[in-house]
Image (tube, rainbow, N blue to C red; front, side, top):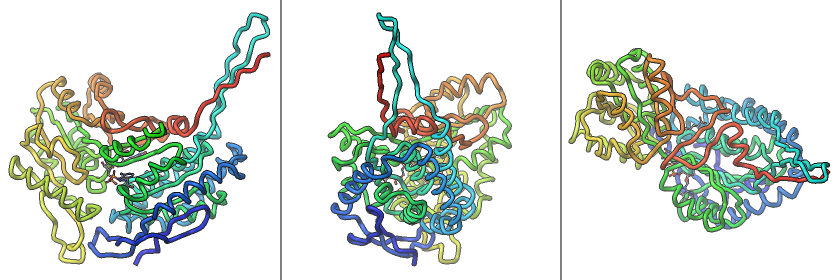
Length: 475
Ligand code: NAD
Ligand code: 6OD
């Protein structure tokens, strides 16, 4: 059984609320339970966060807060192995992903915002006045107050800390609600914030589902000053409605249906290897994964064959997060098999061991579906990529830019001029050329259209989590 899942409110741990089962996606077995926070616990967490703003935390300087963020990073580093085990237990992802990406990125999130905070300056202006003495204007950045952070199940600790770190950096207090499917690493994080001597109530954690439960109660709570959310676009709409009622600011990282473009002049070895990563990392359960790949017609067949060969050779992949999500992905595959062609995968693997009870889906390559097919239009969030040919650069761009989403895209080309022409013309927040998911935490991260509102990363996050105020001093 996994470690007990506990809320963390006002510096104390608590297991109140009706429990629901926690299921291991690798085997399908129940391995623990998660207490669903009653409205009273959510309310207590928000009040504890409000109270903490008025306590010692409110007097900490940016340097004090930067040191606290580094202490949290140190704490995760000290307990690295526990975090890796919890991340794998939460998600079923392979150990090398948890140990190589998720946990190091959580540490990097705290260090990056600590360092950015230390180097941050504010603006000032000297204003002329008729008496010739002038006035000095300067801006002061204040915390927003109590911030709700709501995160999904795919990269549970990475995405939670991506918002918690800048929120704390700017002096806010936080009530976090991780996905009900993946509560483990967030519990460890709560322990680490206590070890790092954050004052009680600065970081709070409540567990439970979203609708008619902790997530909804948190977003509707009048004591929550801002909401930072990552998850499905439809959930974003619901949360925005709740925030609109009291005009609370939101930062949204939402769904996607990311395109890749492979031009005939690309290094095809690199494009195939890159697409195997961009389509199948974490079994396609990364919001940045490529689900639609458009390949220039002259290399289409060769590329498709090599990608299908590479896909069949993939091993050691993890499961879908839940039976419901597995069934959604398999529903898409059934429709795709009926209406198009399956080049690789397409089914459920058989391992001959306890993993057969889990939620695995084979990495799958499809072709031949029309652009308006649900499998090509809707976000699948699984190990599925559809290939289609194009003839001209203009057609490639039109195909990539179609649809309601606009999170990320990847361009594979060895033509420098084309790279600089095509990448900025993509209707997305993030475009990669000859790589995928290469990150610099100072750069803007987010989506356009139904893929998000606002940008996170670097100063964008520090700006979102603070309110600028102008002071004008007559000299
Ligand atoms: P989800 O929207 O179902 O849930 C996300 C979080 O919101 C969970 O904690 C959930 O409990 C909570 N929630 C659900 N309904 C709620 C409600 N009515 N009120 C308040 N909270 C509510 O998303 P998911 O299935 O956990 O995650 C997968 C989705 O997240 C995909 O669409 C994926 O593209 C998206 N995603 C986007 C990014 C990004 O950076 N753009 C990153 C990761 C995941
Ligand atoms: O790298 C990041 O900062 C980030 N937010 C990644 C999101 C991945 C989505 O699943």
